[in-house]
Image (cartoon, rainbow, N blue to C red; front, side, top):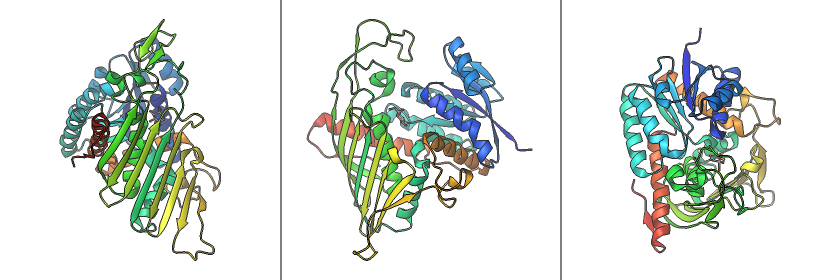
Length: 389
Ligand code: SOE
């Protein structure tokens, strides 16, 4: 009999649903050393959390996250709440001896992220594991990109070009949400989606950002309040609310191995729904990825004869590609949700092996420092801003 791992999930909106799907699905496709039980789902509204639990497959509910942490049948706490609650919940869970998976960005400030990384290091010494949910690392094409870079197929990395393009608030009439409030989300496009491309480019290249020069913009400062009261943001009804975060972030960066980076994160790229575009140029090869065509990785091998060299479109669905062997025959494609499934597979495997999973809270803290440097640079308007290591 495979031992069980009781999961307590806090939050049941978009990320809660994605994580629920992952916990439900992982043991059906991967041989896991521990069997995840969907033990308890937590949310503040009793009726809504009960309805979500029924739909998403959870055995019970709680309306206070503290109760989840107290329960003996919960071994891992999965934090899918807005950023302003991450630190309190994750630290309390770690101190109670529960493993933690926490959504990105790790926190809303460097100070919170430092406290979380410290709690995670202490807990790790006692065998309690933690991971931050940069799920796109587990898209097979991204994992292949990292593998190619680490095998030296690109040579010395010179350029990193990264964009995260969405358009869900390009319409000025799109309503307020907690993601547009600084006290809940920490920042806007920068932390919500810019954090992903910071993590991905560092992960693929194996290099850390050491400095940035940035600018931020809020294009629409007042938005209608959502019609339905009782939304997650706590605001609702007539009138407008003030957007207190950035709508777009643009920055240059330098990487520890000498590469130059150009980054763009925006929710105003009309027509782009979830375009994560990454291009990397090295001394002997280049890579290109676009999440809107997520089963494909483009690779240019500069060592091939110039007459026949060209970007090749690798369809990343072969059994030998990362994670793919557990799924469908070649060519049948994976989707957004598979990254979350791979994330819990790697987490459960690390927990059972007594190893620290990646990305760790320390990795989340490092990304937080990059976000902070971007904000400081944008506020200064003139300076190159170093990132403390
Ligand atoms: C919203 O912009 C969002 O849901 C992000 O919060 C997620 O991290 C990203 O995967 C999709 O977009």
